Length: 228
Image (cartoon, rainbow, N blue to C red; front, side, top):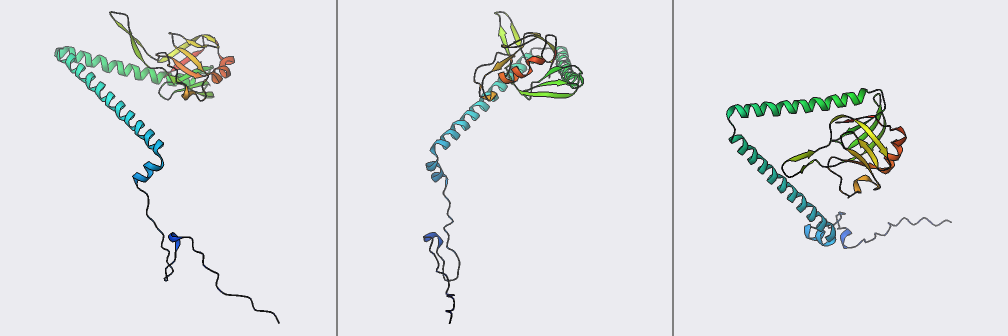
């Protein structure tokens, strides 16, 4: 005669005070969550770094607001010393120069897109350089653009800016690409490029040395470079 199987209910395991069952079958979980004080004690380094970053951003915003306030006051002071005719003429010149700059940028973009010869395109706003031909992108490279500034020679100041429009390659070497007008595209050994903390000359452009070596066989003096 065979013995009938044991069908007694399996024993219930107690997972601790937080997982006890009451007579009605419900779980009595402790759903309390730690507050800011517990988080700060658990991750003091992260909280400190977060506070430093937040303080730096607030300080930068305050500095920019202060500079803008000074510029607006200076503009108001200069305009107050002008006659109505001079103000109207100045406004017309400024508006005309803005239109010229926009047209130059759009023309540079259009020429870079449809140029059938091999050329470089430098997108200043997005920080990218493209090796292109007839609308096809052969290589895309990350770039860091140097700041625009003014150099004083004692009595006057000369603006140093990133060029816009069409330029030409003047010289190619392991030290970089010299562009017409004085702009230089220099290489960096940092990987990735964004980690390079060395200062960039005003108006200059920096790319990775790997990208420079990759495109050097395709470069030649006289090649067109479009900045936009």
